[in-house]
Length: 195
Image: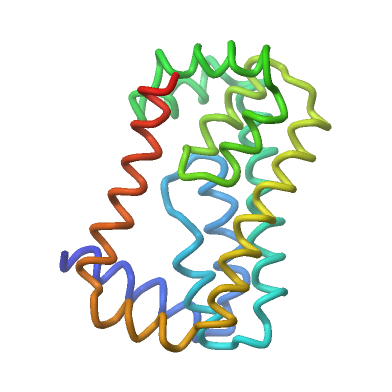
């Protein structure tokens, strides 16, 4: 828990610097493309620090996430053999990746929306969307709708109930960390077992 706590403190540190917005953009971008660094924590910290700017923070987070998803799509479309397969291997999701392709054949928009809003690994769906060459405008539209829904919901909740939530996180940090990682793992296992 010490490592997780230090990571949490490091993320919170960015919320209090002039680099908070670029850091949020960067974290949201890489989370949607290839790395498992969720931007939610930084979005929460920034919204708690300056509640009046929750719309701006949510917008930047959503925009960066969609652009990151487009980059993931591009990797899948153009560089699946060289780069995309390594990302899929990192998450041990080869079998599920093929099933995502079949899911896209039946429900392109719904699959993207589910991955964009839920704990399912959006980055894998972005790679698959490019690899299986689903309709790019559909991918971008559904990514924008689902990512905005997710991050604006988080921003609004923190704006409305921010300081008490921060106190709760600080007080029950270990429990919150366990719950967060359980949700993250559930997202990956949902992908494995549902598909």
